[in-house]
Image (tube, rainbow, N blue to C red; front, side, top):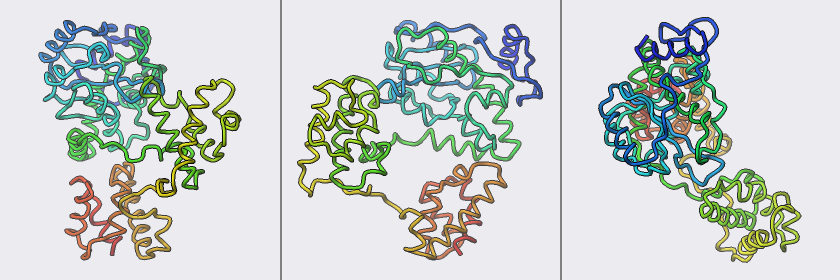
Length: 424
């Protein structure tokens, strides 16, 4: 057990009477509730002087840095961070208000060369990047759990299954833009990084035991070095319920309403769903209402909506109805790569057979390696290689094709031979 684990165990013993695990993996018996951070709830850093002192402390700290961020998904526009939590040996835990301190590039520079420990890193890194925090090395405890074959990889499940402690998760979906943040929320936030480094250490040992540690490091390096995702093309096409919308004129209504809603939501800084639901957008597209009265009768445009709002949405519908045919969106989203697999049997039976064989091979290997298929190799990569296989199907050609589609070295070494057999 690490010093940090012993400290956490002592704290839990004082508050719950439980017994800590002694080997990095949870022992038999009831898990121990983790009710309070070992050093208490740290004050929220909301001014430059406190931030500078905290940065100095973290620069002097040792070992990895546990990092987490809380967003206000479903409440505010976008995915910005509204609280940043950190913990490091020798520096303790810290809670930072990125609204009051929007530039954390100084902190990012102070710990930039240190390994950051995050859970589900791809969710937090974009909002951390926005405030100047960009790691050079990471350890993702969720991804580590997937590679190690854990059936449940949420943070609470991992802490309980690996370390034997229960985290209270009741505040995960609250509005983190609330100010001031209530003390129970701050306690929850501090506990999220309390044992993250301990979890990392235990998972590293487990991955090493399974011979997967280098695989995990390749995955972590790929996440840390990935560039920011480009803006999504035609984001309105992801409106929930779009499968009901068939005609181009109806698609135009969805596009106009979605665009108007997004503009309003951004101006108000609220979640788009609080302005107008996806269901209401689809209902208006299907009905093509001729006037405000007809629009008000549709689900989602009820009596609580004022006349001015209804007129605003009707104007979007009318704009779509007035477009010339040449400006209407096409029914299908332009995508690169192979067609949907359901059409392969008709379009290219040989490719369909290759895909079936490849899926079976990947599934069997993933089961043997005790990890999800999508972590062994992405389904999109398998589809692309099966749809357009190398002219010469051998190990070198298939490995090159996999690398061209972004597969990591460890993935290529594992799946090349099974895919060669499937493609042959």
